[in-house]
Image (cartoon, rainbow over all chains, first blue to last red; front, side, top):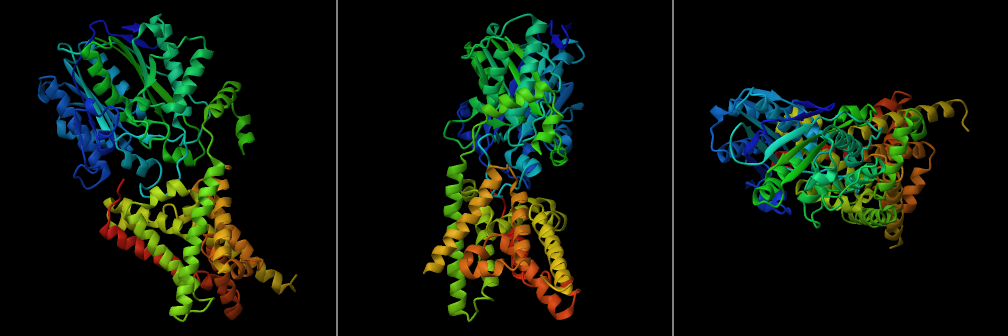
Length: 333
Length: 159
Length: 117
């Protein structure tokens, strides 16, 4: 049901009956390594190319999520997925393997929550019994496509971020055990004229703030309602900006509850500059660590705001600025 | 350049950009410059040693030893790139590894390695000069312009 | 011995200029390299690069700016011999070693190595 201007409230509270977080070698050393369902030692996953490796990551995540839900892929009505590779081939090729009716989506790094929101919409409206939402990213494939070849010696500035090699998948169902999806706020595209592809956090922060503001307004609550509020991948730089912007807009930010998946994921000594990024950042942190904490009873109400930068290598070369979007999903145990 | 862009921004955008700029961790320019100086200087010293080696042991002259020196440096850079260590050195050294001819070799090799997955013709062959291409294009074009200008001036009686 | 010292100082100084372009003006590495090459070509045309190499040795011949100088040198040398067509036929003559080496070694490494990520 629509609430306010841009929020969906799911009356039947669809349940995440199974979810999975899969990672690569760098993630094996991360702060949240224990919350991954599977960690791969080889960046290539035994495949011929980084792009094929990313597809394999997504296949792993989907398989594990469906298995954890105690169901079979034949019982999943729809598969919603997006990623960063050109023409979202990781998603479409995974859909080929799964054989589930496929809806490809693209929200850059906000794809995880975009997918989760849409999957919940399908299940809540009874247009699906089970809908699988997934996303993935691969550090090397992303660098190759958006920036420079991985062995190229370009010095990255402190505002740069590290793309997560991983995949997160969540099976949303009408019945089952697990965190429930309460509502979702769909974000507007926001562009503050920033154009530095090595400072995504700075570009995305306004979009996150816009969506959080819309969520609070539509749901008529305060951020203190939640036990934890996590943005997707603003990183240290973007996160700080977001806190300042929210405060400027008169929204009180409970500092100990407001965090960012890109900051949570990696350890201090890992060379990730401002923090993690990529579609998988929000996905693996949410479907691994945060869901585990909810299941243990440490968190009851969580708001995830996945943020995406909607640039392409070509738009950057054509001197365009970076439009961004953020989608928020509220989970309750 | 930036002021022209600023004119097209709304006041909200301009205001936000100021906030974003204030939160941006400053690049450690001084530290980076020192590192670049050290590594760049070192690479040139190595180049000088190689050049002298060619002059004394291989009967090259001061003039002709330049080319094989560059070839050796390129070989070393290609090897370091292939072993996956060049990018780590470069993250530390910045322009110290990018400005010498080693940087040029690194762009070619890294692109070649990366795009092998797309095949040798379209992948390696087609992408090898992805980053180095501009250097060659602008180098050749500017050399052409400079040469033509110089020849024209000389033909007109010289300056 | 002092050849080495000047090579170190001049080579390092040129890299510092590059670092300032990248960090201060926020130029990409490709833009920075192009700036150096064009500068090298212009200085070569003005006859300033050759004495620079004589003085600083590898400190001037190793940075990518010497690539621009070599292109101009090749063009002018050939033009002296064969007239204005020499500008086209001679441009790559001096730099052949650099470009050929980069292509050959780059291609060979793609045969045997994979990126490490």
